[in-house]
Image (cartoon, rainbow, N blue to C red; front, side):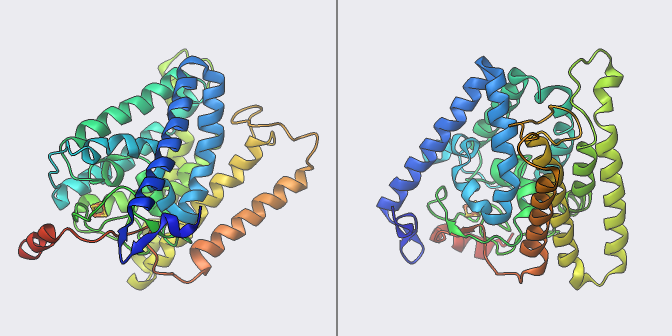
Length: 361
Ligand code: SF4
């Protein structure tokens, strides 16, 4: 299959053949997602390994390199956009303020759910499956009412704030395999805005707070998260809530630092500051995650994929994580902004364009 098969036939419209190829890829990834969900429900040990120790560790790097790839094939997105693809959506549009509120809810949900991995999700396939199914139900229901990706993929999805932070200077920009025409349903559209970042839109106080929380708080939150062991026996509410302590400390520390720096640096340098925090966040993730995947982690078997402690020297792991850290800082901070969006915007729907000219968002 040639790259051109996945690209535009001419101008900004996908050819029928390209659409078919994308649908096949989406269906294949959807089947993989459904298989993982099946394993989570009925073979939890395998499901947890596939979901938390293979799929999730790949995601942050994919967001840095080409967030659009994930946005085109994410099984949850494919599921949640079904009502729109099948012509069953009422295709309502969100106001700017509603979108800001959804973005803030997404950030708070992310910070609430991730520590619970230590308390329940990392060791309980059924709980993880229920979490995924709940997100799909919310996404499908809202998809029956709202236009394209506005409510879920660019609004409520708790992964979306991370995409926005890490996907600020992607290497690859690909065609939009979901929206056939742009209805301008999200302003600014995270998929189609070059070098999008969490502070790209500060139209409402909700946008401002969500941007600040994710850019400032995520690096410390990740650091704190990796300093908590999986709790396999939770007997009290106190043990249950203890999983929040370290992530909250780390979150507060880097958020405080970010707020102070934003106050003192000239406005034009804020974008670089966000890139530095993004690179710190994703590097911190792999700094701890790679050792734990291969048996060199802080907490015995937590997050273990395959134990390489007998085959790989410790300095080998250190060399890998240092190299990866340098690579992320190069990609996100040192490299010039390349004006690429995650996804190339499809042609505008003419009617919508005219309406937007009359009533600008
Ligand atoms: S490309 Fe257009 S229609 Fe699709 S999500 Fe972005 S703004 Fe909405």
